[in-house]
Each structure stands twice: as C-alpha cells, then as structure tokens.
Length: 104
Image (cartoon, rainbow, N blue to C red; front, side, top):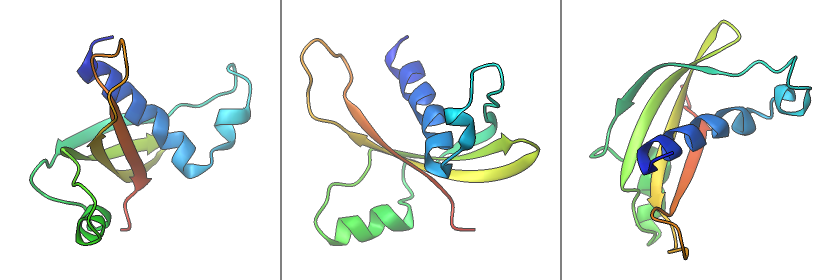
C-alpha cells in the first residue's frame, strides 16, 4: 500500500476502535465493518481539539478530514487529525492519527 492509501486505511481502522465496538472482538464472519460514505478534507481548518492543543504549545496537524461513516445504518461524523510522526527506519511515512466521533 502506498502512503496515502495506508493512511486512509489506518483512519478507517481507527473508527471502530474509537467507538469501543463489540465488532472488533467478534469473529471475522460476524464482524460488521463501518463503510465510508463521504469525506471532506479541511487542511486549513483546525478541529477544536487541535486548536486547544496548539494553545498549549503542541504542533498542529498537517491535515484534517471529516468523514461520514455508515455504522449499521446510522450515519456518524468523525474528525481525523493527521500528525507527523517520529521518523522510523525503513518507513517512508510516519504519522499519527487522532480519530474520534465529532461532537455534534
């Protein structure tokens, strides 16, 4: 997987983990994965959390996406902040994703 695809897949994997899904602990035959319906890149708009962290001296994310995800028929909006990670040997891309449901 190339860098961009890898980041997107990692973000989608973060969606169930952020909700504490029972799906992540069930067998793969019963597992229901969330489906990405829509996303919007917002690289110039900080999320409220990123804005607060910036006031505390942390580096801002290099990108932000808002995703609409179908979770068993319910549409849920998620905010994903993309942060540069520490360099790792033999890795072209190092990143950290903060994936969480939106507060709305």
